[in-house]
Length: 328
Ligand code: DGY
Image (tube, rainbow, N blue to C red; front, side):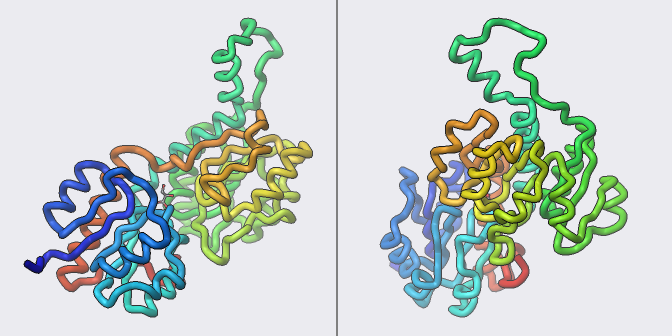
């Protein structure tokens, strides 16, 4: 018997409530044990599905997309970043791509602040002392980090997440600076008391903390190149909760090794899940496993967006979160 429901293939395990609703609404295949799909499995899914629901661990490049079956009309990504999908190739094949913007903003901004505090105040180092039993008690010169209040924070990318970071950072007494492709509205600048730098180079050279909050696109790949990282002050910190590819990680590691940066707080990496082993041994580097948006509430809202995008598309309308090449 053929089904009138769209055939939806989900590549990773999603929150139970979302999976259950997808089973009710669509002819859905779930990935119950959450093993990432191989390229062969992705190609097969592209051939069989009407709708594919991938996430950031599925690299859908042109060579894979060309194998899509005629029925595949929608890739409803579970996630905001779509840098793992060749949007242009998808569009050329008449496949619509959607994502889940907006619902990760507050969670990712929280994690950015957590990384700023953890790195500048040396929190994991302190916790390590307790866990290893090496703490000898309080001492006047023990575990000194730096005061966060009064420092300058340079935000690279003043979109939703950048602005949410700025709002939080102001409450911690940081002064807000930003670089963005386009200057934000005057009212937003005033609300955040934010200073705009048209020149990223100029901004980097003056900041105490730099936070990367822009999407990864061909234009932002290695935006923080070796040359730009060298512009940063030796007593400054780099925080990245966006995408590893925006920072030249090799150059960052060399600078940290040479003491040319005070520290880094990273939730994302260039070759996830691989981590440069040199960073594992650095006490001034705080590393998290890409968990900036990992809250149950956020993941459920992402799933709801995926469902809305599929339903709207199935009903013949333009889904609300359609991603267009050139607009990311
Ligand atoms: C996204 O949605 O792009 C996030 O990085 C996933 O956590």
